[in-house]
Image (cartoon, rainbow, N blue to C red; front, side, top):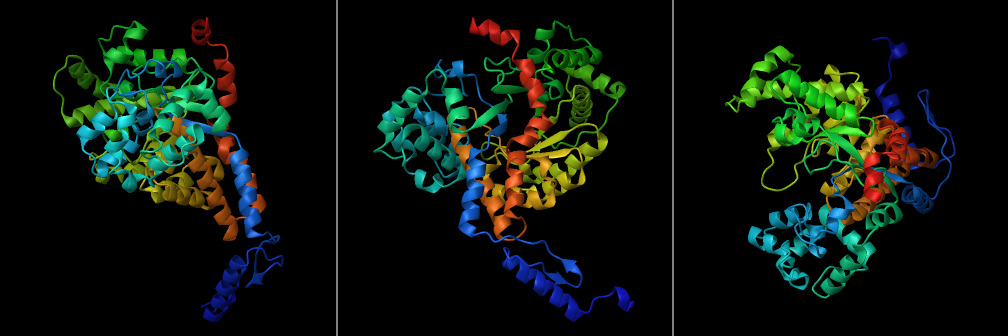
Length: 490
């Protein structure tokens, strides 16, 4: 053994002891050295002051919301018109995500149907959820709703005694301009990125610079969705090349205004898309077009080909590609064994298309340790924490904390409400800001960051990364002059 380059057991223990003592006394002003290792100087900071300072910075910073399913504000005034707006009263706040917690807690589906029915009086709805409320009220889904009810309606505790006040607050709030009031004035969100669920590939929003839109590519390759995507283009689809032209049309028309493309195809399969040439996909496409049966392998082959065709269009137009990973919405439906492959499949996508900027959504919960490794290894991998703060607030805080000391900080997008109704976005944003503040404080308190380190990260993660990755200044300028919004304001 070469003693010149070796460290004795005693020396090693001494090194670890000094390092441990240094991190415990994180505000020591002295420079420590052990076996030639110099530690950074720390300025004295009182723990309470650091927590307050960080929290103030995080709660004041503008926030870019990188993922929503918000319907247009005008649709909310149409009342209970669809499964996405099943009722027009306080129960609507429970209709997205929190309904799943209630069902998993034991609420019968028939009672849930009555709870969300427009035919049941708002005052009578509390008794339907009352038996299950104590079991769910502390989940992230419920906390987002509780915070929204407190901030919007002045209701601190949802109960039989407060339902009347809850409904009155709902009616008073749901008035013209309430989207901007909730999102901009109260949640301090500067813009949202919306993945519309109304069928078209791109939604022409009445509020284009606030509700910025993704191009939905899932129907371009899964199915494909001929009836939803082809008619607007005027293209008669008779061959695979025609469908390529349909895809081209949507990008040529809307890529200038879109912030990204989005696919939630991971609800149906893994994201293991292989490169498949057109000549191999053409016979399968012909069978699908003629409504002939195709095998699972054939369907995957066609989906894989069309996925990459859409991704290539996105990359050509400098649009990031957002992909659902991890946890499923709903209940009693999630094949966890398939989800665990999402991070490894993500690495293959990054390898196959190094010029594409991939945004992997929802931290691949519960496999977020693996997603840290993906983002650390691949330059074109970014992680979006949308939805994660209400799936599990503690896990999301853990991810964010680990990301900052594992992965470059410019590769994380910390918030997306992921809601259809706008009201719970306020609660979710509050939870996210609280978790971000807590994570930053813990890193300072444990000695991994200085207070200045933490404060310097706030603007980057709260809005800087999203502005850069999605080119939001450029998109905003383009959206200020769109004709569709002008016509609808006349």
